[in-house]
Length: 223
Ligand code: 5GP
Image 1 (cartoon, rainbow, N blue to C red):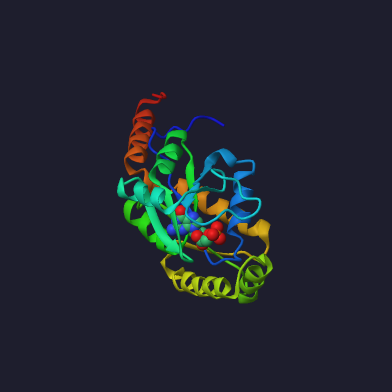
Image 2: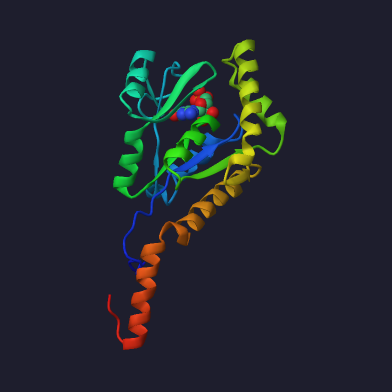
């Protein structure tokens, strides 16, 4: 493909995937990160005080830290957002956003609704996507299938799912994850459309249009 004739500007924006447990956030995110356009995204590895689950890789799935280390980063102003979820601390180190911007990639965040609110406040260019399963039964199934949860933990996760659903109207996009491939295609469509949104690049768009007008007037290309 030819270089875009629009002058350079920061085309990256964070993309938040939120939604209740059972919505398929992890599957959708892994599909994007393993797909043909994987280099458009950089996954935001969160920091958490919860214990790793079997199969989770430190610093790939999460940075697992103790409360002191977590709070020290918050104190130092190094956390873009953080929240307590199911009694544990979760947060996004600000360095994640810087690293994505440097690479020209969209930071892909799998965070809860409290975190989404905080990111919106500090990075208004963010695109927020709320992923939901087609029916409540999937949420319950998913939580029960995980099996590792005690009845108390299960109850806590169900009440978080309620809180997540209540926040759905705050989001930019709602995607129902019934057929997985369709949900993934919709997320890609959202990112494509947002990349082309003129409001993200008014100045660059105007420079581009003025140059094209000048070329039309001159009858020769200038770039
Ligand atoms: P889990 O413990 O099941 O991996 O994640 C529990 C919840 O915490 C999920 O809803 C997940 O999206 C959210 N979460 C994961 N990382 C972060 C983070 O960095 N910040 C916030 N606010 N929530 C997070």
